[in-house]
Length: 157
Image (cartoon, rainbow, N blue to C red; front, top):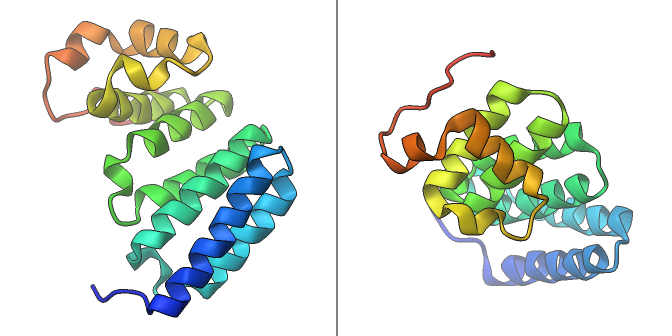
């Protein structure tokens, strides 16, 4: 994969930083506008660029904070399909949370299981305790710690 042009990368970074600043002060729609502008600058195919992972992760997080869980899940699913998205514990955590809030329990369990395998309990410390409780109850912490690469959930419950 080739690298983004330096000037283009700087423009994308600036837009994302501006979006992050808006998100920090709960101006979520303004943050999403900045992330959308950054996304628009990515050359096709957009999903091949590492920057796509970060843009979609940030936008998904904002949707989650807005409590638009369906949009959050859709955006974070896209982020998982970008470079290193499937090994980013935060993306998987937010995806699991969004799916759980949307009522997609089986898919939430898959995302939480993957996130937990990558980062353990610490990932959940600053989150609502109900998410770790879901992991402990539904997935069984002992089974996750024991390892194994296969997911317990292959279809909807």
